[in-house]
Amino acid sequence: AIPLLNSTAQLAGYPVDVITRAGWAVILHQAAGILVYTQTRGFPGRTQFWRDALVTNQVEKLLVYGLVLSTAYVWISSFTNWIPGELVSILRAVFYGAGILCTFVSAQRWGRGEMNQTEKILLLVMLLLQMAAMAVSLILIGVLSLIGIALLGYLSGGKRVPWLVIALAFATLAVLHNGKTEMREKYWEQKYPPPTIARLPDFFGEWIVRGLQPPEDEKNVSRRLLERTSLMHILCLIVNYTPDPIDYLYGDTYGYVLPQLVPRFFWPEKPRSHVATYELAKQYGLQSDEDTESTTIAFGLLAEAYANFGLLGAILLGVFWGFVLKKLQIWSMFSPMFSFAGLLMILLTAWSFAAELTLAAWISSLFQAVIVVLGLPLLGRTFFGQQES
Image 1 (cartoon, rainbow, N blue to C red):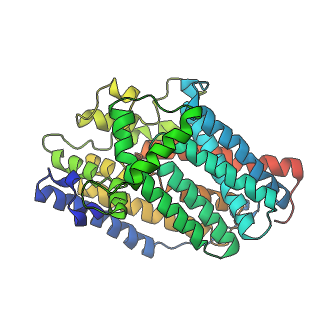
Image 2: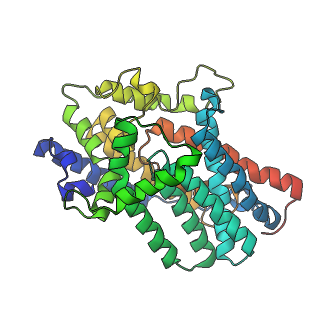
Image 3: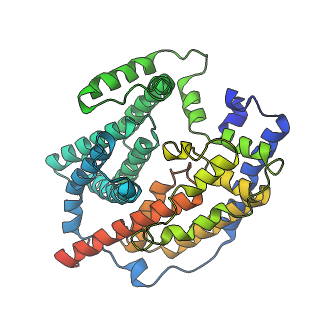
């Protein structure tokens, strides 16, 4: 809701009453979530899911090399057409989930002082390569989440704050955000071809030069960064047209959630994971059927909730997250970091960055990643046996 305080150009076209109602949607959503969170009670989990450690010391040491596979996938998917279209969404979630696990565990080992120099260099190189490939799309949320997971892993292992790394990361992201608009105008609107691997140095060189230039308006870089990570303008759009002239959806987009849990192998005609996003885009006249084949518009969970049930939807979404997240916190209170529950918490931390998804896409991608991330430790324990972590 930062744009509400900044009075950005994104909101300039909406009446004050629309912006006010959108602001109330945010406030009521947050208040409901906090209230339910504080009042929810329970008992710590006692089953194997909550208490048994899955990742042994031997497996932990190997996970840094798993980053090589996830990095290879990121580069293949970014610079080639080798992956069949029907497998793109599945493999993206699978390798992203595996990459999150490998990054977190490896960074935590570094924080505990258990990595040798070779492993540290390998971790840094793989992360930098992944972030470079992700940034080529000119969408930086993947880069931001990867940095966040690595820092969280390091902090949980070493209890030390890497201030220098944080400062360098923020400065770099600020420069990239500052130059992102001009780069998007060139590569998106003017349809310049995306860079090949050979042109990456020139691409990032151009991006950095543009990012170092003072903004044409007088906004500072950090303010622009905050604005561009907001979906407030989308929420205002939904509020402006709902329920008149566009009626509430009354839960239609949530009907796509459960089907996403069915593997496509058993249901080849299963709707696409972003089907709810596409339905919202078409409902509000932002896209046609043809447009959805190549472009996905970010709506976010709160805008989706409002489109379905108005302010009541915003409140119910807060209630849902407040209850679910508090229950998971209580159940995993005494769980080892690398138990089923602990690994699930790592994934939920990573998916908390996915603010632009609708619930069906959010659940779909998380479900696919959970299968991989919880399956990998089981395979590791099968091959290496169960030892104390």
